Amino acid sequence: MKYAPINVALFIENRIRFAKKLKPKSLAVFNSNDILPTSADGSMAFIQNSDFFYLSGIDQEESVLIIFPDAQEECNREMLFLKETSPHISIWEGHKYTKEEATATSGIRSVFWLKDFFVILNTLICEAENVYLNTNEHLRAIVEVQTRDARFVEFCKKRYPLHNYCRSAPIMHELRPIKSKNEVELIQKACNITEKGFRRLLGFVKPGIMEYEIEAELIHEFVRNRSRGFAYGPIIACGANACILHYNDNNKECKAGEVILLDVAAEYGNYASDLTRCLPISGKFTTRQKDVYNAVLRVMRAAVKMLVVGNNIANYHNEVGKLMEIELIGLGLLNINDVEKQKPGAPLYKKYFMHGTSHFLGLDVHDVGNKYRLFEEGMVFTCEPGIYIPEENLGIRLEDDILITNNGPVNLMANIPIEADDIEKMMAN
Image (tube, rainbow, N blue to C red; front, side, top):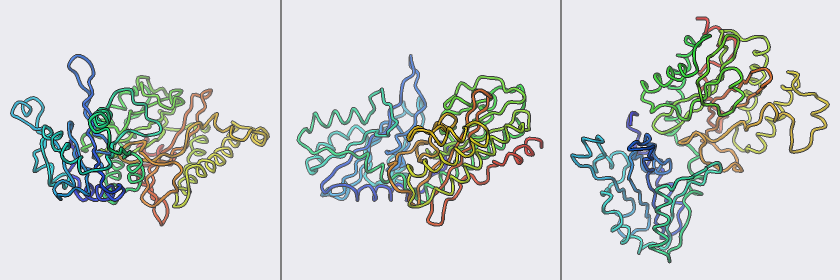
């Protein structure tokens, strides 16, 4: 990993919070992610399982965590199992955690090699009545490969069929949305790196440049600031491409007079940031482009004010939709009479603004969380309204990352330029 050491108190506190949610005599097991293959002898870059990292801080494959608060021996209440290194592994794969390093990173004193896992589990599970197992229960998850967690679920139910099995995911979905001070600092660091990348582009974007050249500038700036890279697949979309919500080919030429939509952000320490800005390729927006841009910006600023303790996603999105209706009417894209006659549940603004305004942000860019839960202090949301007009080859989306506090919303990207006039001035300079 490239990032600086993370305060071990974060992971210790996370395990304490998780343990308090377990039923009496419960043992919980979390697995690291697999290294996924490409083809031949190739493999993808390793990215740690977010739940495993949240509870351990260990950023390595072939790792297992046991949390067993009611274990009879204190040394068995938190246990970590790691891939044992060797001179051969050191030569071919590089350094792996030593037991001492794992303890320093996680705060877990009982660290074993992975070869001992099943023997120790077989002993401990006899003390437990409930076994908590982890699965990916994100509402938008599409999992077509069998994960390490999924294989372990099969193993446990076959080997220990008489235990009571419980789901860890609901607990993780309850805990992870509330960010601690340490987590906010990591997200802020990711936002700060993203800012550096964005400012690098202000003097770089011009007619004739390719979308992938912009991508290259960003990854250079992110990695040189200790980020692994993009927090998600970068969207670098000029002209009509900006009307494709998840466009990521990034292979077109940026032409004079077009606007480029940049949905690009860095991660840091496995924590994501999420930014969207729009730049005029020629350095200045046309009158129409600026009108659409400012309409989106007005909706965004009003939407941010609604990210407050006690609100909820359903009410929030409904109110943002009303604001967007007004702006679309003002832009001549919707007719006020048609809006007044629209069917309930089928708002006309969806033609030009078809996605939600906000999502949870954290270890995953679309972080886990219950959309019916009231907003609480410590939650972090994106705010990203947009207007997409394919017939005008124009898509405008603006996005910042917002921390909810008892004193109101805090914009973690407040230092990143967003005013159309400011962007034009900075591009000119």
